[in-house]
Image 1 (cartoon, rainbow, N blue to C red):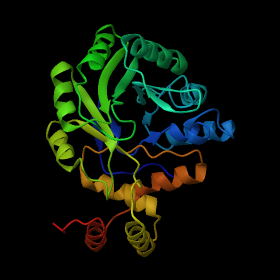
Image 2: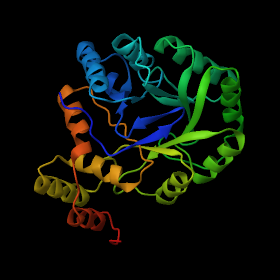
Image 3: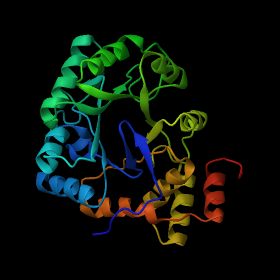
Image 4: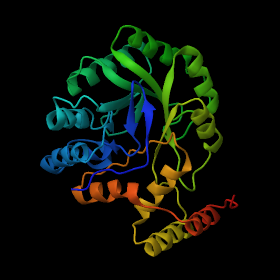
Length: 292
């Protein structure tokens, strides 16, 4: 079993975490709905991730719903002292598996208590408020009302730190006026780079940025270029995509997810994938970016 040997760590809430973490979403059933096909393998993936050095796990009680948190508790409790578990609230699942907003004070409060109960914790390390003005993409609008509820739960001692997900730069600024924001979790990768300026601004202020969908939104040409670069480096496209993100900014924390032990090992090996300048240029050109 190889251990994570990545360059550095970054502050997330109360402690530094290694920059390559683990996302639990894929531990739920198809469409992130219902139980997994192979619960035993899911437990093994979680245990190997932590044994390999991962100390940042991303989850939510609306994965399943209630599936991934219960698996995390079964696999890892009592938890290692250095493990940071980040969860999300602000959404719920419909009976058909749809993703629906859950922004009322009662829904947000209930979600925090559900996460506490299913994870088996007295306090949640970090809770991201997942904004649902648009299900898939950030959309402008005030987040004051739901974030004020979460900040009150933080004052009550149920939540240590607060983050935001699926947000615009304007909403991040609004959120920081309400409470300390320790991380922002948005869609970002080599070709989906709307948050370039936001990432740099957060880095200057010591705030973590957690991208999801490292291969999401690639065109066939971009995917072909990524595959060609990966082949030249003796790596996989996912490893190259993750290595590019690690290189992009020091405040980026990764949470690639999988329910496969082989894919977990592949993802963790991305920490050792070095990208030469020629590879960076080829990737930037495929993404429509001029080389620096």
